[in-house]
Amino acid sequence: MAALGCMVCRRMGYEGTPAEIHHPRRGTGLGQRASHYDAVPLCPEHHRGNTGIHGLGTKGFPKKWGFDESDLLDDVKMLLGNDYHFEEAD
Image (cartoon, rainbow, N blue to C red):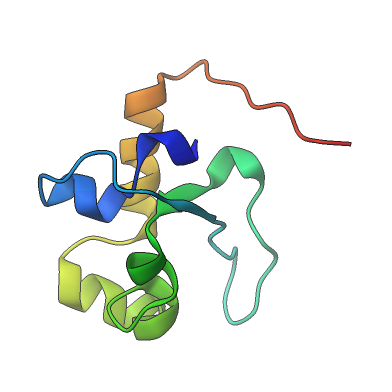
């Protein structure tokens, strides 16, 4: 999945930016981490940086960028197709 590059950078026209995997939280507050099937590749800045999901928070991120984690997850699913499967390490 990381090979797709950062989904925020991709929306800005920069494909292939090195990415790490972000697992959105489910529910409110410190909910349970999403599975690997519902993860989003983000570059370090858009993941952990001041303009990223962890830096801005789940309310500030969509205010800055105009889209949220679920929109980025939709992008991932569109790129990979509906029948993608990941193998989890033991």
